[in-house]
Amino acid sequence: MPRLLSRRFVLGAAAAALASSVIPTGFAFAGQVFERGGLAIGGYDPVAYHTMNKPVKGNAEFTSTWNSSTWHFSSAENKAMFDGDPEKYAPAYGGYCAYAVAYGSTAKTEPEAFKIVDGRLYLNYDKRIQKKWEAKQDSFLQQSEANWPGIKAGLGG
Image (spheres, one colour):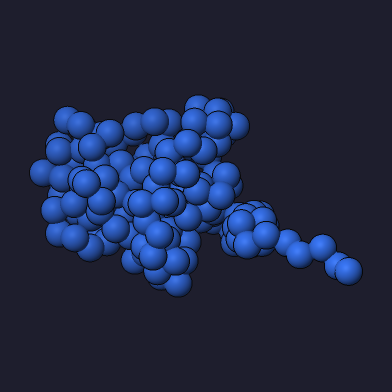
């Protein structure tokens, strides 16, 4: 009789496959921060997620370097807020997909797939994955927090 695979194994394998999928040109995993086009979180303003509750594209006029990555902001005020407390505004897990991190992997993220939880920004691969993540958010957050130190170390952080 064939051996049945556990649901956790199957989900973990799916997340690993997602994370190891081919990354389109312009995407990079640059150490601790996910970059798209050479910019942290694709040039989106991390502060705007907190203050406007939506993704807002940053402007090269308002730039900071933090955690070995270039960050763009939509205003001088947002840049100043970030510069004053980058840990508060930067996305969790270096901007990598929170769902993938829960399974011990990394994956690219999309700006629209986000959620602020207890003042912290979490990004996901896409809206479909975000819905899965939100369905068991507390459990995934607990697992992600346990996995992130090892993943971060593997990324050179």
